[in-house]
Image (cartoon, rainbow, N blue to C red; front, side, top):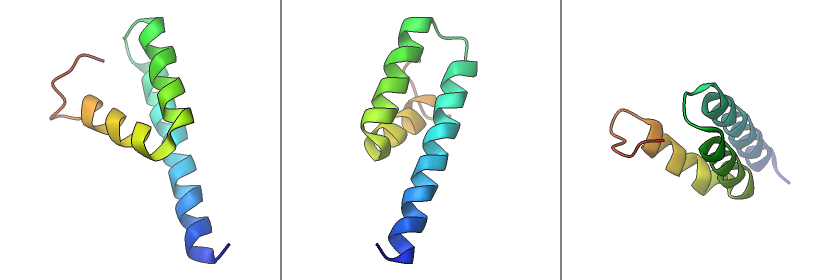
Length: 63
């Protein structure tokens, strides 16, 4: 594995941890927290993008 892919993998892992921490600090109910955490862990890149869109300022869905 070259250095660039290792750096990208570490960056995605760190962002996933930050996203999961943000999910668990939010005021949403426990079931939604579990679902978001599983989505982020199982599909790291897609889950992170979906969470960022849903939780961001432009997100119109209720987390």
